[in-house]
Length: 412
Picture (cartoon, rainbow, N blue to C red):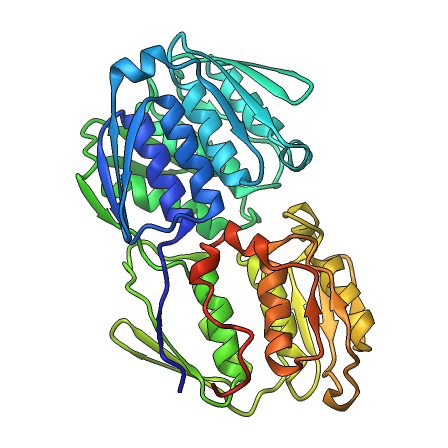
């Protein structure tokens, strides 16, 4: 069996905790730190905001310095992490009289932020755009009814939720029954409730108030299940299986944890012993799986489907065109090169098994998308004649040096 692998901290939790530290203007030490590119974008924002940051091998300490904050020019830049940018926009909008600027990459401009802008300006902030630069004049956000139109991204809700404990009045936020990626909204709600926020269910949504906010001096960050999902699928495909060390807080469930249920549904053997999850191959077979709440699982599960008996259908994936790349298109282009039989519909992908005896030497285009690097690495594990266009983009999820030897031969 493969050596036991410890998974670094969840970037979803880390980015939320870093945003809460900025809202709170207080110090905190984050344990099981993951200095991946997405987290570093938030780290750079905290430095500009006025934080001292001290990192060691497994943790990072953040301490707010009011004098640094006053001296800062408050010019921020976000290039790749939509989560970091969208959470940070509410941080700046909720700073009374603070004038700040955010320069965005073309990728983040394309991915959008307008529903969040409308909600924040409705509560008192001023946000204007000139080319790729946002000019923000902060305000003590009023709270009240935070209107978010559409069902595009849960990150808009999370941004307002994390700001809610610091608003003038309770925030009432509508959440549609068909809201996508709702577990990420629940993660944000669970975090603020741990530190003193009160959350009440009201008609069509929630009401958030806070009278006793207390961010801890230290906080353990749970393992990143989105990264663990890649290793878990590898365990289902490799003869030796895999063991994952996953220290998890049941109060902070992560959306992609459903991967272990999906693996069992598809015939893999999954067993838990405390913090250790063992995944072993089994009699793999196709299944019908809805990924509406965990769309990041599509790439790795689509590769797993190639090694299953019968067809697999992955549904709820239409909005993946709004990610770092059009991930469904990226998978389909790879399938075309590999001669896979599949059908792509507006919101689903139906996949038939791969013929392992007819896999030609091909170069798979990752589109510089970390999730496609993970998915295509699973193929390279089985077929050394397959190459990837690049692997450096994996740094978006985890430091490249900690990306374990995934290109090793099966069973190593």
